[in-house]
Amino acid sequence: MPQDKDTVEKLSELISAFICYAAGHLPDDVRQRLDEMSKIETEGFAPQIYDCMRKNMEMADILARPSCQDTGLPQFFARVGTKYPYLDEVEASLIEAVKKATIRAPLRPNAVEVFEEYNTGNNIGSHIPWIDWELVPDSDELELYFYMAGGGCSLPGMAKVLMPLEGYEGIAKAVFDQMTTYGVNACPPCLVGIGIAGSAEVAAKLSKKALLRPVGSSNPNPKAAQMEKLIEDGLNSVGLGPGGFGGKLSCMGVNIEQASRHPATLAMGLSTACWAHRRAGIRIKPDYGYDFFTHKGVTL
Image (cartoon, rainbow, N blue to C red):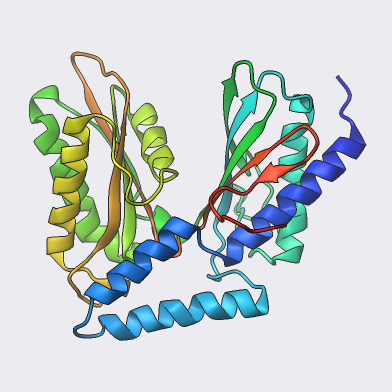
């Protein structure tokens, strides 16, 4: 079906403004958690690092610029209602929005084509922006999460399949091995996302989706929630601290998402978000009205 150019233009304009704002303003829950942590970190270099973070956020707002020079690779997690009237135009609108935001925000061009090894210059490339689709029955809205997957926060990312006898202790060991090796590269304090499933690709995807959950939320399964707390306490005891300069707290939190596994496999995935966790969510109605729910009260 031919795409409606007027719809693509209207949607891309709104989503471009959404991306530009998200690039320079952290979501409400992340700002609140960083403020809470800064009041706990009173020794060593930690207070100065949190002061730098605070100043960084203030200047990003004043200058209307991204809060970090690495604006990452654009990733979208789209929950689209089956009755949303512009379903055919969503993908084209997201691509056009990224092109516009790359110039307006501005976003650093980060899309490097694999094998050819050249930068496309506009953050558009093979399967980039990455779009994860989910259909929502009987809904006429588009719920869109945008995430900037930067180089630092992507470095600790991994997925592996464990022998089932390694159990949940094996998952925890893999997390600690990775975070104590690469966690400092992710600009801590990090939000840690863990996926548990039956295959590596499902676990990896769930670990990234775990980063979309609010900071401070808990998995509804009591055993998973307990594991989140135990790993968070353990990572904090490592003492990475803000910026990796040492401190009492290494992570903003640990979020676990799970899918049923095969009896013979236990897969885990790990994704991290840096302190500048530029995750943003918006619901768009058919009349282009919206709810920017990660940044309450903001008008685009």
